[in-house]
Length: 605
Ligand code: AGP
Image (cartoon, rainbow, N blue to C red; front, side):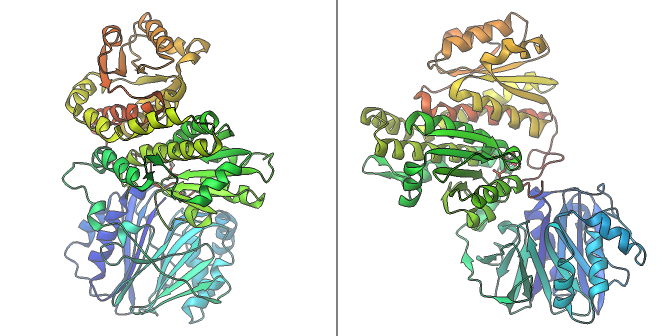
């Protein structure tokens, strides 16, 4: 999950690379590095730590060069140190390489190469540059073609060679890499934010492709060196969408963007008072599927659990929801009437991509919900629904989650109507309340100060438990994930009915419980669970329906959410949990947008 940037053009390369890396820092931030070619020699600067440390290293050194590569690292092999930072170079300092991915056969390659090459780092990446050196006989592209034939695993590479200052090469296999096509300049990057200030024309590279960039030309080849014709696509995002717009953190901005994201999505799907999936092909796939397998990771998996409930209740279609890291290795019992749905904000999660490829091999059609158009999962799916949440930069997913829930709901309602499994009256009631979601989110966002006050009471705890039932069980899991991943507090999510089967043994006065208990068909059951944990002295934060005095009375702290149809409660009940996690993490001095050990897009296993 590293970030790569490459540039060849008419601007000062150091500023282009540094700004590009800053835009990709959410992909990894253990170390950062830069390489360029000046007067036929490689200049390499790299350092453990954030990009600002690299900028300090480059500060004041004018780099009059028009070609360079940069890297911000999420350590896979080798600790975050200066030596392990990318770029890496070979013994003759001919090549400089930055890499995102994992070279799975690096140990055997290193054993062979160590006989005649001196290794500086403990990374898997360094074997690439020594191989390039061995394969170089004066032709840059040929040396790359030869080298990649020895590599197994996943690699997105940007490569320069000091004998070819007019050429920048990118390689893509298993990790994302895009080409930006500018005026008198061309770029390589792991993701759109690093490119968008230069150009909106991109070529999302596909696995098994090599891009050869000069200042005015881009050529794409396959791994056999055969030229490929690839059309560029136009990015619709506005550049300022990837800025913080006055918020202290991307995560807070994205939490507050949720009402608008839902409004934008409502406009896309409401037609003559009904909600419609914006693709007949998707609807037909859903209608004709005998059973559905949803597979995803992290927050997207929690959205998938909501989808499972909806598809079974409103489409009467048996649905499984699996963690993609498990799904990709399991024995799949299937037939052609199955449908595999991949849910992924980034569209690049390695496990989810592997799950899709596995299902595809078995002839199962693939429908995916993604946020990033042109992402690998988008391009490898038979059909895609875009959740249209706009760029999500904060590592902790927020607006993408509620946008995923919304789009899954639209699918269930539209198909439920077609199949006659959703009564018209109920559909009308749901749609009426669906339109109120943005304002009901705003109601909660308007109480952020109260939530930040509650955060002050709990930011020093070591353990927490989130409880929910039915549709609010995935909400409990998601709320726990938000808190743990940005505050580093141990937070676990449970189905409240599970408490008696073990978890309640954990509960005491030092173990706060966050109970998600809005008025619905399981409310009384939740109230009993809250009484049980109260009886064991645990402090309880209740997330409940506005005006619920009973819940307010038995909880130590109460965060109200507006009354809404049970089906829609997950779309708003998560908002106070996002804000609570944000403010607790802030009070703990954590880096909310770039939590330790994490990256926004998990493109390696
Ligand atoms: C969510 O807050 C986490 N950052 C993480 O669990 C994330 O949801 C997961 O890695 C899946 O990412 P994707 O949606 O891009 O596939």
